[in-house]
Image 1: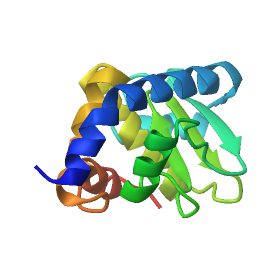
Image 2: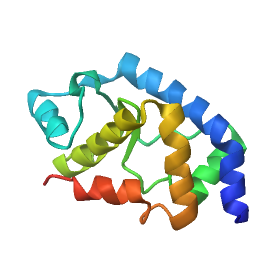
Image 3: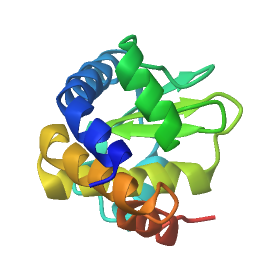
Image 4: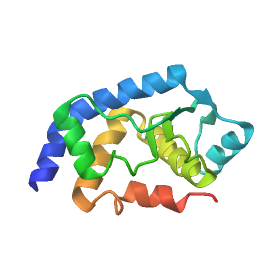
Amino acid sequence: MSEFKAALQKVTPKAIAWAEAQSELITTHGVPLSVQGIADARAVGVASPENIRIAFVPSLPLPADEELRTIALHAGLLGPDMTGLTLGHGIFIVQGHENRQLFTHEFRHVFQYEQAGSIATFLPVYLDQVASVGYWDSPLEVDARRHELG
């Protein structure tokens, strides 16, 4: 097993806890989808688009935990080039990057979370894929790109 994969597996429990806390923040403070957003979410497979909330932020949040933050940045999961992040039914969108392609990409991740059943079930699979083949080539990212609507 690669050193990076082992490090990622080690921080997975912290990643789940951080993701669940961020999802709760989005659920509390985010905005619901528009009628078009609901239709687009359904078009990419989301079962409960009415549960999606979006938080528009100046930049994606980074974990306070240094080890988790370092690994997330190294893996390309977070950082200055990222414009969206889905955590369960909560989505962060970086202000100025709002477009249908990004929204539907993130909606497909909501679908993937729904299929997995929870953040705690989805995230280990997602992180393992990223550790094994990289962010861009991970099957869940490939699937999300395949379902983007322009």
